[in-house]
Image 1 (cartoon, rainbow, N blue to C red):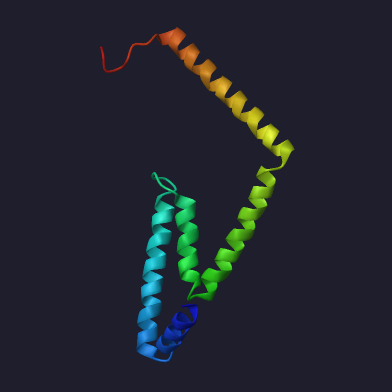
Image 2 (image 1 turned 90 degrees about the horizontal axis):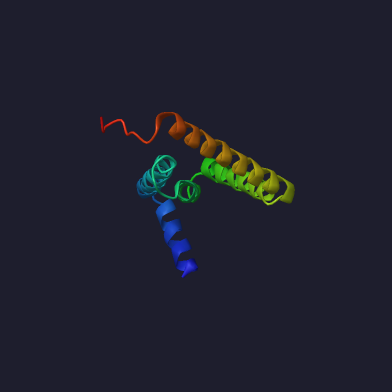
Length: 122
């Protein structure tokens, strides 16, 4: 199966117009998935996964996307190693607990000062 696909791609490469159309289609699909991934960083959805998939699609035809994907994989690997470090993990857990306690104390202080009077119920 892979041999047939490889031969099919070679036929496309042999025809300049068809090759340009193919590369344009790959660019369009890859850029769309990449843009959706960037949008999903602030909207609900798997943003980083879509970004990686978008770069993977683009990397099938473009060397710059292959380099960007390789760099992103290396950065993700370093981040994973750093996140799995027991000392950093313990520090992050303690910081999260402290931040949660500060937020809870602020909410309690607000409720003590102003009560539970909602602004739209005057």
